[in-house]
Image 1 (tube, helix red, strand yellow):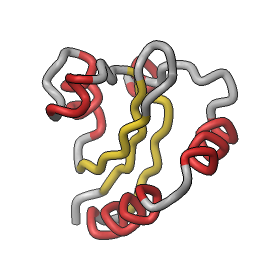
Image 2 (cartoon, rainbow, N blue to C red):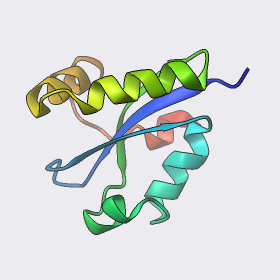
Image 3 (spheres, helix red, strand yellow):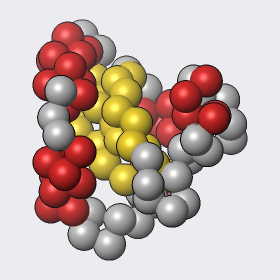
Image 4 (cartoon, rainbow, N blue to C red):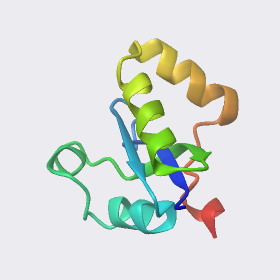
Length: 95
C-alpha cells in the first residue's frame, strides 16, 4: 500500500498557505519549488514546504487533508509552528 503525505506550502513572506496531499512528497515538493504546482500555487508563488505529515495510506492522508482545510487559519499556523517554529523551508530536509 502506498504511503500518503499531507503538506503545507507557503510563499517567501509566509502570507498564504496551501494544503495538499500526495503519495510522493519529494516529487511534489520539487514540483512546487520549480513552478509546476497548481494554478493557485503558481498565482501566489507558493514554493516553501513548511509542514509534512506522513500516513500509512493515501486514504488516511486525504482524510487528514480535508480536516486541515476546514481549520481556521490561526490553527494551521499553530500546528506548523509546533513542528517548525522557525518556519524554515523543509524542502532540503527531504533529501
